[in-house]
Amino acid sequence: MIGNFTVRVARIEMIESNERGEDIRLTFHIEGHQTSFNLPIFLNSREFDDTEVVKIGRSKLHDVFRQLCCQCQDWQLSEDERRQLAEINVRPATLI
Image 1 (cartoon, rainbow, N blue to C red):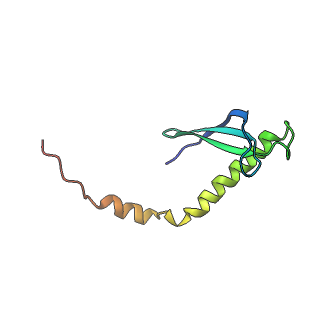
Image 2: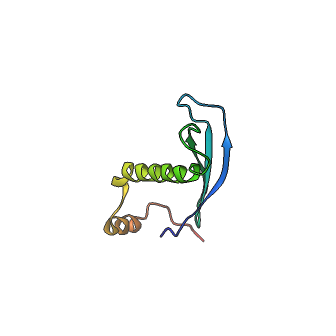
Image 3: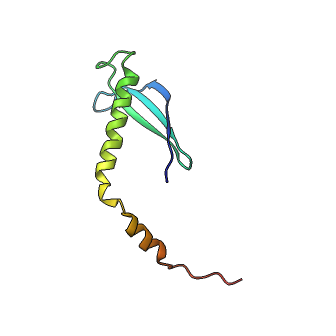
């Protein structure tokens, strides 16, 4: 079971403009019980003012996770499939 995650803005910085014209890197820090990682979101400073950057970044972060969820939807196992896999013992027994 995966618990709740804490998501916070770790850093907002101006960067050299990339090929899409994005020149702001808004980095989110995501932390759970056994997982911790940073995820950068890139924005264009000409499209948003300072007060909108975090709000737009959070929306884009949501889009990233929504797309990931859609892409791995067929990876989801049923409870029966999990139980069957747990019953398969493919590791050799350890002799004491």
